[in-house]
Image (cartoon, rainbow, N blue to C red):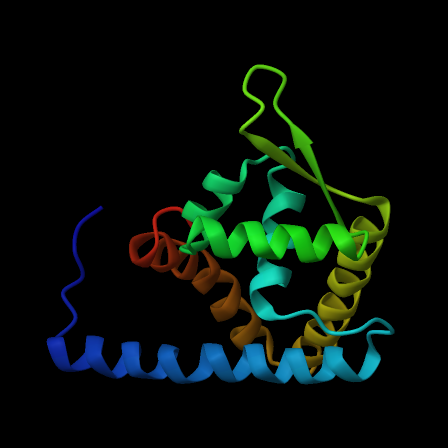
Length: 157
């Protein structure tokens, strides 16, 4: 894919806009979720770990730490806390007892599904008021945003 012909100034403006709007959107969604989610809010690192395990059932602690850009001992501590809350299972590897594979519990899956439903509802509600042109622009931007995410953090996604 050829590099963009955008000016350095245009790229800086776009980068600044993304760095401002994406965290603001995340905070807005997080606040709405805090109002409607009937369970205690988990720290962001634990939520990210649950999402990752939901996507990669059986992932190891080490692989999870690499994907989340966290230290393995911090992930291990989160695993212990989530296991104590009944949200995560740690299963030993039959070939190497030092390795643990992570699996969501049914309760964690239920909570992740509920979070997904709530988030999709909030975003669908917000998208309904946009013009067709804005919706097309957002749809076209999704691929580019995923590409940017993978350039910033190749293990993301």
